[in-house]
Length: 437
Picture 1 (cartoon, rainbow, N blue to C red):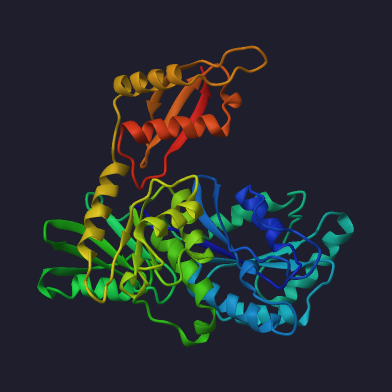
Picture 2: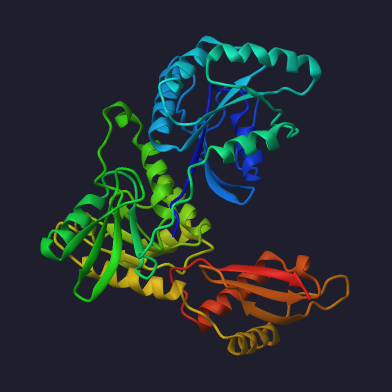
């Protein structure tokens, strides 16, 4: 299991950070507009280049408000990026040249020993190439001219970026032991749960140096359980970033999720499933991690207006279409059902490692197809001729068909639901691929 690598894109508003993020991650999740500071989404994506995988954060998504406080907010983001990221990509605008805010960001970056890639954006003609030399004045090395809109120069930039990534660290001796990460927003009870679990009998707990800086991986071995528990809650809170806990917690969540097998997502029963909880959930889902949702402080909820059934249905509405996720209602304070959390996480880990034989899988698929045929395409029948489980770290299935591009989302979901109905994949995202036979 290798530790994750984070690349943070920093810079003042309207220099093209979101456009660059979209190009690197090959997605269109960032809102791109000429209005300064338009990015509001919590932006995280994955990028692969020359065989190296890394996570990309667009810090522009964390600048909360336009106006005078921009400078303060941007400074916070740069400081957090310097703390948490492995490589910093500093984006500048060739049209405006070096501004006072660029100078402030550069002053922060000059203090770090982490790699900083200087990217001068919007260089899309020869005249603008001549203007790039001005950016040597920042004293941060060779500026790289790019145009994030048309992609010119991004290949060279990615080559330089990958050359500056830390060596991939492979953890030895832990591959057989499942790794669980307890994640969630601040103040939902993550620290309390961990302290209650490991504080019952300290003699049976062994500390293991974690791959994530400042985090602690603890081997939990008692009551028949044996796994690595990643504490993302008891991390020292740096005074200089205490006002920006949301961004800080996302940076930490990314690392802990990517290096785990199962994510235990804790939410506060009094607040419900909030936007930040959904961000973490989708992050774990995209990374094909096992997921357990834990609703803490259930003892503080008014039971006359909130039932477990009703509360579960509300969460499912937020999670749709992936609703096959265990939800456990606990009170860490009263030690209610906390060991059920561990047992459920173990069960989800087993589900994630489940292998289906080719014979039984194809019998199930044929029964599903006979019960509900895929809709015809231009008068031609779609035939699914063969299926197999792929040799991946999480459940993924390949379906071979005569018209792979014509399998629409409703039918994909139907096949996934049939897989879940036949085999227990509770808590595990499934990936279905359709290929030409």
